[in-house]
Image 1: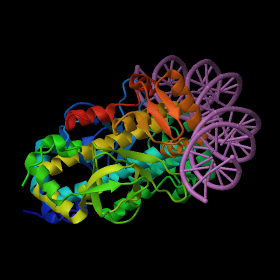
Image 2: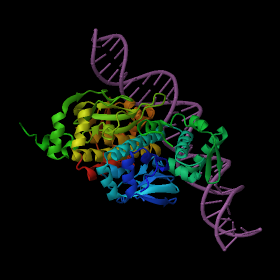
Image 3: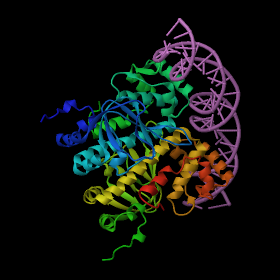
Image 4: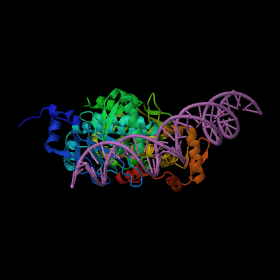
Length: 238
Length: 238
DNA sequence: GCCGGTCTGTACTGAGTCGTACAATCGCGC
DNA sequence: GCGCGATTGTACGACTCAGTACAGACCGGC
């Protein structure tokens, strides 16, 4: 029976596990391809699977019927989708959907619950990630409350760039406006401004990151705290 | 040795526990009085105690050195302060301080870790609360991003009212402006508006809640989601 | 009863964003 | 290579809130 080498593990959360815990996850995990707009967790519906992302990027958004949508969480290969299950919660009022297509390892909910019951190291590792998610959401609350549209956009692009292979982010202005909870023409203006600074290059349905340092400067300090906590608690991010 | 009756438990999280789990907590918990401005968790410092609040109200705020402060979490007798410890995290970049004085039961960190290791029912219950905290923070991100100052103020007053005995909230305009991350005169104006609607009555260093329904209307749908999830997952809130 | 700090009320200008509308551009499918 | 939906660029008035300043009101201490 072949023992997979750690270097083939694309999800960094799984990569941080003891080999024994990792093997236990791998034994019940199923590789899946995720297409844009796939809904991994539907608002108010029981969570059926946990997804450890390998190359896909997933957004968690509020699903206010009357109000507007806005993003409250962003997950890539540094994390997993299904934190509520870890906390013994079977469903959530928010929706998690695929923003950028890619691969993932999925585990059926009941199997996942057995896993974290039996493997304390796994539970600890996923708990650390759950806390980073909380930090990210709190940071988003801060950003939404006190930063300008341009700063928030720069922060979002950096966070997305962290989770993508390459520098091209396949997003439209309208999509960004929903994620940030702002007006679409406002995004167009902010993108022009960031482009003028040399941080990005904009194409149709795509933003290419050119200079992360310039983007960080444009983010006005709104980027980086959850990321550095991830490194402190879990290890090197991708 | 007297066995405390459930009805003497003022913290509703502890009240939701099996008697056996509760006794285990009570055995290592120490009653303390918390004064306004006491810092329960300092930014970046190891967390020394977990606090189950009985009548005090505690705010979690970002502690951005360069940037502004803003509230990302509010806890009263429905919860506990020290969620990071539950998730195996020893410190946090945010600060938790006492906003309204009162009583609490505190448990030393090492004892707390032993407790949740030995009592799975306790861990589950606290995990549910940790999830509600996440919802509350996500809801704050939504509010900060899409609601007006007046709506956000109404939401905050309702959330604080939920956690206080009586209808008088001892807060100043300047304090509210920090919690909401807005300008102090803006709070003054918004308070006048809510007062005109008949939802509250304002005095020096105090806001009295007169009509919750009017406040809810003024909150424009920004209030209530985490509260109803608390009831679904844990039980009747105070 | 006065003093000094805290709290509240009000005013003004400017920045940022909204809501909306509409034209221009792109790129895929037939 | 044409058409059509999707995407992007731009404009304009309106409104919210920021930043700042300052005066008046309150309240506890001496």
